[in-house]
Length: 358
Picture 1 (spheres, rainbow, N blue to C red):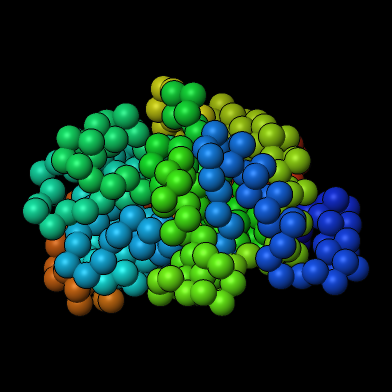
Picture 2 (tube, helix red, strand yellow):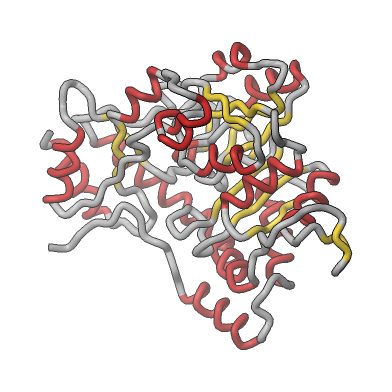
């Protein structure tokens, strides 16, 4: 039986040629292609600086450290995200403070943020989940009122926008280029900012604290991106608009034809890029049964995420037992269907037919 994968890297001859060119050049480490990738990615996001790093988690850690987040600080974020968001906060010695989500968009509820602010709060870290940005005007207003840093986890939302402004341009942005992302380099990440000081700190953090070679001004790490990764990223950037348009076409098809489950809600003014097409399996249906049915039909589906972050053992050891009712409810209902750009219309029709059998 032919299977329909939940995700599939869109690799063409352009990526292959770019990699071979780097291999033949003999310059594999961070170099001219990384610099060009940074320049073009900054243009995409509408910011002055983009700092390439080795993966999305490193981007989060570098962004937090560059914003002087550390021991004793609190960072407000969402409980409904990949674990890397909270892990990055913990890596700095700070403590994650969770605020519940909006059940329609799955993003953090901006109305609940202010009540979570304490004298120790240093930053707000919203996550643009599944490819749709948070309500950034409201969140930025809260951050400005309280003098808080704003760090965007845009790891699933490259190319997304909110009221015409790009993800990664509201504060310090962080991105992931993992193999399944809308723009991928296999592994890789990026920090974006308009702040010259933050940019300089991130560049030092990614390279052992060096501003000048072998002169170490601060504690740093090896978070560097290789030119091999950057070459793939440059090839992907050339096709990002086309790949995003295809994801939007696929999501539109699913929206028009799915009847058996609750389809995703897109907020007005949001340019959704559909990293995941996430429905809700409710009305008494058991999600495990739906997963089994789709898999038996040859369609791979995903559950992102079955356990919210605040219920993970490693997090409970830090924050204790807290309740986030909406996030916990969504964790039991969400189901992601294939939406990647390599789907054929025949495959889209098959997905619709099988989900509507429910």
